[in-house]
Structures are given as C-alpha cells and as structure tokens.
Image (tube, rainbow, N blue to C red):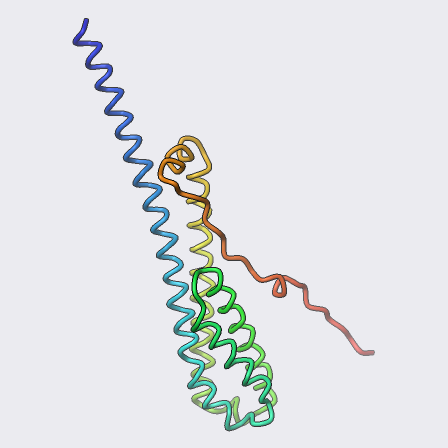
Length: 187
C-alpha cells in the first residue's frame, strides 16, 4: 500500500515538475522572441537612419530652396540616432519616416532630382527598408500578443507572477497617422 502511495506522489511531483519547466521555458522563449523582433526593427531603423546622410547630400544640390524640409529630415534622423528604449526609438522612427515622406513628396517638384540615379537608388533602398520595418513590426506585435496571452491565462499567469513577468507593450501607429486624409475637390 505504501509503495502505491509513494508511486502516486512521485508521479504527481514529476507531472508538476514537467508543467513548471514547460511554462517557465515557454515564457522565457516568448519573451526572447519579442526581444529579437524588436532587435530586427531596430536594425532596420538604424539602416534607414544610416542612409539619410547620403540621401541628403544627393538632395541638397537640387533642393536649395527647401531648407525647412531638409532641416526636418536632419532633426528627425538625429532624434532617431539618439533615442533610447523601445518606445522612444519607435516614436523617433515614425518621425523620421514622416520626414522622409515629406522629402520625397517635395522631390516630385524637381524632375532632374527624380531622374538622378543616386536618388532613385536611395528611394528604392528606403522603400525596401520600410517594407521590412512593416513586416517586423507585425511580427513583433504578433509575438507580444502570444506572450501576453500566455501570461494572462491560467496557469501561465501563475508562473508569470512567480517569474515577475509583466505584459509587454504593442507598437502602435501614432495618432496623427491614424487620421483619415481629407480629400477636397475644387469645382
């Protein structure tokens, strides 16, 4: 009788140990996936910021009268390079993206610039980087969703609290980008 009782207790202990190890490892793996996703975003944000000085050299010769736009791009890049932490880097990255969009919109007024090989190459490189940033942001948010679901549901929430793990933030679109553009027709 004592032998059966000992086997049952040992079985319960083994099952609990397996569950503990599984949830501990799962929470750690999901947290690491989020950190990796952010690192991928950060790499692309840095690549974009690194392209800006060469782009600016190409553009400055053509757009001497567009100093406000050039200053805006330069300041946005400086903010990106000096930003610390996920939220600040994401905000600075969004600011740089907006400044570059303004630059490319203004460049439409300069046909010789639009035909410049270097400018076209930079524009293509930046478009490629923007696509990678969009993909990695989606991957980051998907990873955050999976992680947050794991630590908010039973029994994951118990293990998360023991591990002192908290909910991770999503990368969100800035409010100014969420606005629907106003379209006006002059008749």
